[in-house]
Image 1: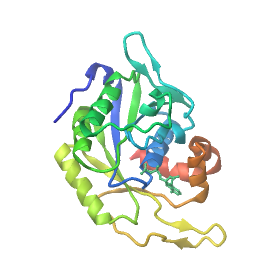
Image 2: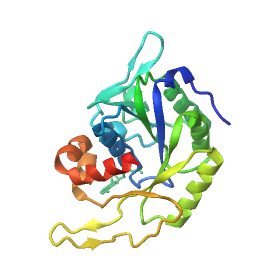
Image 3: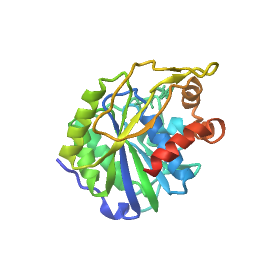
Image 4: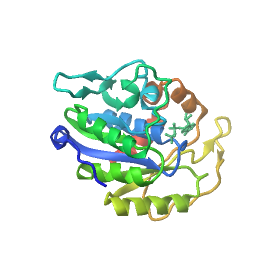
Length: 253
Ligand code: ADP
C-alpha cells in the first residue's frame, strides 16, 4: 500500500535519504544525526525526520529535548531548528515525553506519512529520515510513499549482526521498494586503544559484499557519553573532528 504524500509541501526539498537498519540499537539514530551535521558543515540546508516512533532519540541526541514543534495558521507544523538543522519528531509534539507511543503498524505508518506531509520543511537540500528499525511491511509503505523524493537508502549495521544476512534483507527491501541502496555504514567496527593505538575488532571480523561501505565508525566511550548527554553537535565540531571528517567524506558520496 502506498500512501499519498502532500507533494506541494515537499517541492522545496531536493533529496530525501532514508537511514535504515536490520534491528534496533546498532546506532542508526546516531548515524542519521551525524550525517545531518556533516551535510550542514558542507553548507547544505538539512532537515531530519525522526520516524523511529518507538525509540525517538533524534531530539535528545541533537540537544533539542526541551523544544517543541510550532504550528502555522494553515494547519502545518514547523520543525524545531537546532544549530541550523530542522528537526521533525513526534517527541517534539508531546507534552509528556516519558509517555510511550503505542500506535500499532498501520496507524504508525499513517502518522509518519502525516508528519512528513504536514511539516513545513522550507528549502532543504536534504531530509535525512531516521527510519524505524527493521525492514518489514510498514517500512516498505513508508519507503514507497517517499519514493518520488528519495535519493536512496543508507544501511547501518554492526559487525555483531549476521552481516551477510542483514545486507541480503536490505537488498531485497530496496529492490521491492524501488529505492537505491547508496551504501552501508558499519558502526562499532573496531576499538582503537587510546594508549597504544592497537585496533581491536571487538565484534569480530566482517565482510560486506555487494554494498559500498560509506564509513567504518569505531566504538568510542566518549562518543557514547556525548550521545547520552545530547552533545553530539558540540562533540563532532569541537572534540572529535576526525570523526566529523569520516562523516563529511561519507556525506560527499
Ligand atoms: P539505534 O537508532 O540503531 O537504535 P542508537 O543510535 O540509539 O541506535 O545507538 C544505540 C546506543 O549505542 C546508544 O546508547 C549510543 O550512545 C551507542 N552508540 C552508538 N554508536 C556508538 C559508537 N560508535 N561508539 C559508542 N557508542 C555508540
